[in-house]
Length: 361
Ligand SMILES: [Zn+2]
Image (cartoon, rainbow, N blue to C red; front, side, top):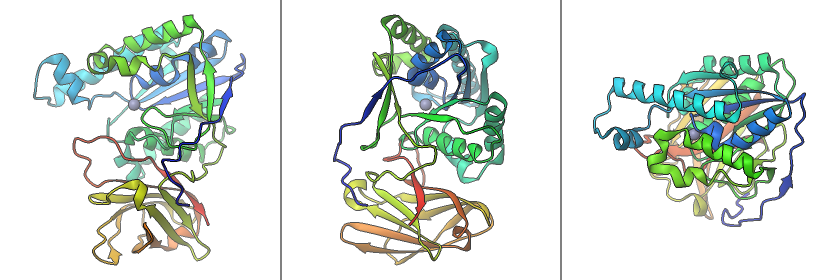
């Protein structure tokens, strides 16, 4: 608890991932381009050993106004322009995957709202979970490549949680998880490295360049991913709390959720809400959003999904704020996640930190 986020422990690197022809690699990519920048090497290696691959792209990346303004030299972007941009990005992803050796029939596009996955998560959207569960149960992956829970892009971290919720409903056996952190890393996370040959790096670079709409503004940043190793987080099958995260969230024996916020490491709480996504054996999916207006000792809890609300209090002590949520839905905690994020994201896309699992304390 309260570990210093600046304590940048050297990551533990474990080299190699021994892929075999019986392996089945499923990639959940939040946006067109993530499949290439995050796993363009792994997909090639999987194909080269005869392993089966499937890539599911959740959004079309159509809510992407700055590159679109730059490329199309237009300011106003309405629905038609946005749909055209999404179609273009889908085609770019198809071209990239063909460069990586992934066949058209091994790719799926879900067309979910770009920059809207957290909202769907906070509405406990059952269709997204069902769609991901369907892909897992049908494909039966031995390896599931997915964004990291700690990724600062809200679509990425929400994809991780949706994947966890889908896995919780699957009949297929639990695959090895290979989370990728594209937008920021949390200290203390261990890495597994996949080595790429020079030829594989060249092909990965070509796949990244196929996302031409993203190259005008981000080419140098994107091409840095075509390095001699591709890194994934080394995680156990069940989510575990990262002691370096500025939030620590636990449900105690009385069924009260305490979220301790390390103020030194998370900055101002102004305009920040505490987001809670709880799966309860008794009460089903519960989603709460807690505005952190700390001028009062009580704070309102907004129920965004589910039938069971919560009451929240908070207290400040030695550089921490602890928000305590009381709800009958917490006794049956099966999975839970908490994060701080802006109530109204506006034009600023990124969170300061990703989500932290809620544990039993
Ligand atoms: Zn992305």
